[in-house]
Image (cartoon, rainbow, N blue to C red; front, side):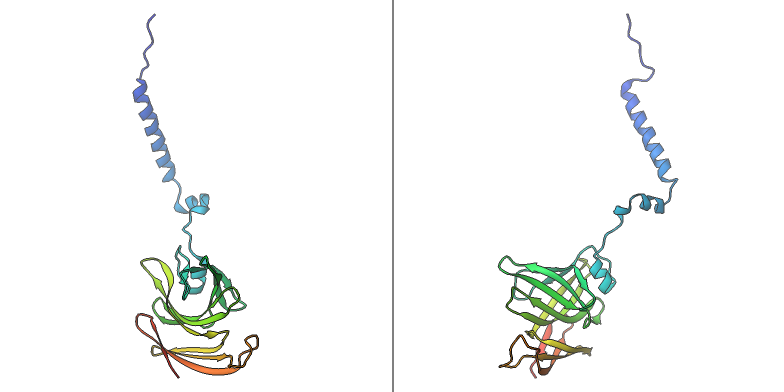
Length: 206
């Protein structure tokens, strides 16, 4: 008994079916607009860091990154505290851990994508160190980073920060020699700091 022959050899039938599927899918794609596609796949929208967006109005997928002074650790700013007017992030160097905060109250525009503000670093109980710090949004890396910082003091209270002609005037209160650190600081000081074009800082003795 002779075998019946298929009208189209099986080896040719498979690519023909695949071609039909591709054509149908293409026709369906061009029959709907982009809004309908995005509505069907909401999780495919481009993600961005909410803190950087909120504070700087910059859309970037990367977090605000701070290399902790005098440490090999990095902090990633991922919290906004409107009541305290700060943004915060934790760090862990393996040896010690703590928290970095940057004041949004004193955050001041220097130049395009460049800022200066007050930053604090707290660790496991040994102090809350206040720095004047500069930040820059690296367009190539798409990341807001710490550029430079200078130590102001331990457990100080900043009363004012102004910026003019590449110079920061910082007014703050600090503890005297015989003043308990647990008490409110009551010694007043005004510190002048130059912000260089590369955002490095030069502290002036006064």
